[in-house]
Length: 258
Image (cartoon, rainbow, N blue to C red; front, side, top):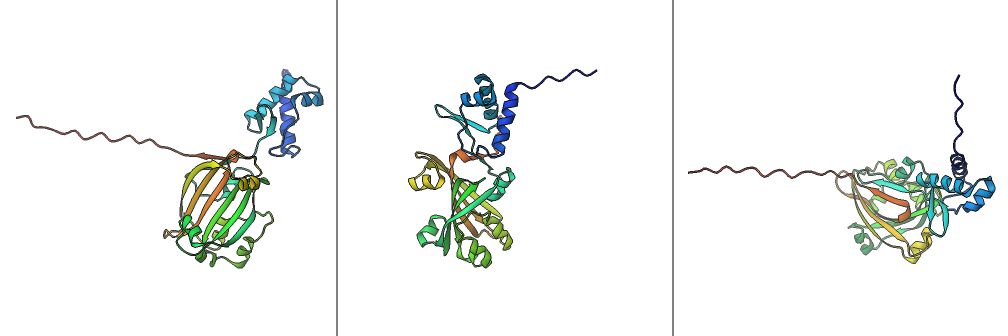
């Protein structure tokens, strides 16, 4: 006769319940969770049980604790690997989240603006707010050569003017227009957000930003677009694959002894 299985610890049961409530949207990303005392009263358990349950969710990356402020639902994090040339939408979708955008502005760029992006030809500047699961996480400033825009269908260009939230992807638009992106380069820096950037990203200054400047090229090496991506640092992680190569030993020299 099989022995009856032991019931899971109460803190595990509570962690499962809290995890389910967060997944169902009762507490969206960034929301402050009830206090430990409030959870204890609601579920009829001790504060120690609540603390253990919250610690489980912290270890899973679902909840973040802030000293003196309480526990909060973690914001979605965009995890990038440098060797993969993917669009923002592809990266977010691959991690099980929903990518979307709002167009902030679109128009002709000045010669100086284009050159600041490394574009030495007439171009347009597309500025978008990028969202993950509806939460603002980045501002993308894309410089697109006019010759590239001339190759895009009218319905695609119409997407550049929509200020409502959509799932538009610039890389997908290029692919649909048979514009192939063969290679790219990225430069990563960090700085503090300006007041305007903080308001757009719904973050309180001073706030750290990760700045990723990407340049994309076709098979002939001509630029397809250049983007300055301004990320809320809380939403962005960057991974590099490094290989250490050992220097070759200097060849031994033979000397003749007379």
